[in-house]
Length: 74
Image: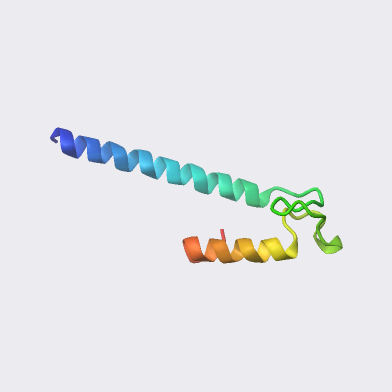
């Protein structure tokens, strides 16, 4: 294996590790419970969503972003 192959291999491994870390953080964040305040707009959540992280409007926006990025919601 020459230096270019080695460097390319290391770059790929580092990139994959970063992507995995971001995915793990997103999954952890998604499973957290909220305190009644939307984490995006900082407005009070609707009464039926008091334990959720986002209000209905912001969650719909987040779902659209997830679908654009990954083809699905995480």
